[in-house]
Amino acid sequence: MLGVGVDEQSRNSGSICPAVNWEVPAMCSGESNRPGSCGQGAGATVRRVMGFGVVAAMLATVTACPPTTPTPSSEFDSTPFFVDEFSGSGRPDWPTWKLGDGFSWNDEWNTARPKNVRVEGGRMVIEAHAEEFEGKHFTSSMAWSTESFLFGKFEARIRVPTGTGTWAGFWFNCVPGPETVPERDRTCNPPWPAGGEIDMLEHVANPTMAEGLGWAHSNLHLGRDALGYLDNHRNTSTLVDPPAGPAGWHTYGVEWVPGEIRFFIDGRRTATHRKSDEGPNGWWPFDTVPQEMRFALQLGGWVGTVDASAMPQQMQIDWVRGYRYVGPR
Image (cartoon, rainbow, N blue to C red):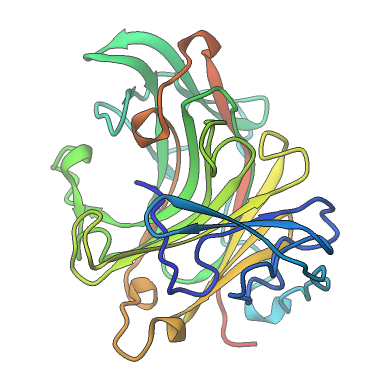
């Protein structure tokens, strides 16, 4: 969630797959690493992100991918063990959620005020405002789970904002601690990115960026021992353009099992990442490091200048559900 660098050596890394017709999946089960494998027919334009933020454009003659096969439900419990339908009103349910309060990651100051985060109309709303607050020009918030997770199937139905400079996310992050340390200064054990990060959704609202407005990102962050974007930090990323863009309601999900992570949009698999892709000496924290779930609406930073005139902007979460992993299919 802290950036979009892409490693070309990883399967699916940097794929940008426009879904002209959502009945044709954005990737062939997310298992192709061939440029052009995501096109929608002969002459399709296929773009791949290469290196760290360097964009290449390629033209390829390709064949549309066949329909994906749904993952058998026997791999997960059919009844969710973690669920929030966001009924009622007011503060998001405690003890399910902790709320961001009193720190800043980018150009926003996060607060727990109802103005910035609340439940209303059957949804959790995270709302950004243009206002002077604690030295920042904007306020917003985030919510993260008090419970940590290791494996499972997780989904959330989300609508993201499109105001320039907004940056909405739904992800898992290695659990920071201790609680007595200010949130901005807390680190995971092992530190990020060694502890891992699983991004089911990042939406960057900046139409001037190649991976900006209209694209839904899914990412993995992992690195053996580097803090920040150093040599040992790898970010594998897949970008998909769902119909009507992410600004419509979409269900973003992940199937997280030992040795493998699969991303989905509206029930269609968009990418698969495997431990085996990292090689015999590769780093893969996702089998051992518990993660906490997060929703956030951030502003600015590497995303670019925020359009203050477009405020307020909302990220809305209709529901979130988690299904326990019960064993291999």
